[in-house]
Length: 272
Image (cartoon, rainbow, N blue to C red; front, side, top):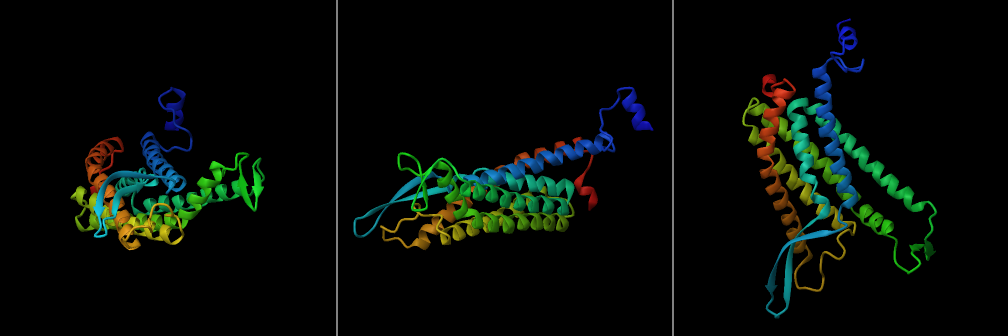
């Protein structure tokens, strides 16, 4: 009755399904965080290892006199990935472990949906010529879609396995530290959970991508450097990049938590 009176006098714009203005506000914030998380995951899966960004390079000279440029690079798909951990930290802090895990599962389903669209988009007939089972443009080049599709499929298992392991690790460790510190030391659960989960992700995605052939052209066999050392360089570079971003996001996490406490009218530490 009270809600109907508010609607009648223009005091509220709530939909009948919304219990209160505060509840609607909390759901909108969750929608933004979950949307940013899922959108970043989609970009990661589509972009993946389509391109590696060279951060810097050093020259190493072997005893034979051969010079090998050691490039420190990160896959372009890594760029939006740290944002996903910041989003799950916010969701874990204000909405709890169960809802954070639920978002992670939806992210997995979204990955499968993207792969399904890439798969069916490749088997449906198009306007390309097909030569020996390979689609080709009129100038003999491979269509961009199929190049992207090939790279995405090469990295899909790496992406999903690393994603599941790292995200569940992040959510678990976040709540572990939150429980141990009784809701205090925000910086510890923010960084402690992310730093370990990012290591899990970095190792898993590079190693699995390597074994399914997704790093062709990145690793070199024409230099006297074992492949495992080159893999370690890639893993280390990606991890250092993620660690730096994780440390930098401590400030926006503190600012965001302080603002959301007032906006959502909820103190996450009260549950402890």
